[in-house]
Image (cartoon, rainbow, N blue to C red):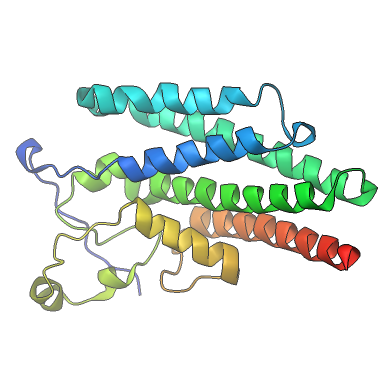
Length: 225
């Protein structure tokens, strides 16, 4: 059952900040994984992606005031869109590389695992970026009671939330990473069902990509043995 009450908007002095370091580490990991991919699975200079990630993340840590800029969400969407395009192209190239068996099994299996992890991180970022108006809007609310994903904390009665000291609970990146991990492994919702159509569509795409990669891994393993 979807929570009905919107979170209360608080004044600027009460704004809580979600830590940014998990997102930075996750995006740097994606850049590192892409840098480690074989040349036949990369598109353009392999170092370009991690350079873009560093160039975008560095100002947020060196100049925290940058986070207040309204252009930051736009840049976040653009950067994640670019990363998603890189990932989709690499998966397409992997699908075409497997039947030819021109590359060693070790390289192909390692690349498939790297792309599976990339898929997990990329979609965790999309959920984090889009849910309930994005991180900026979630930070302005005193608690999280409405969104595209129904987290267990949202279903608890108000008195129980206060008793458990989670009345001002709001999802962070690790919550969305956990949700994305469940989607990539179980191919279905687990603890947090989707409520909006866009969340359901993203889950379908993520599950399809994950299933494709796992199927390719299994097929390659059968050929090896």
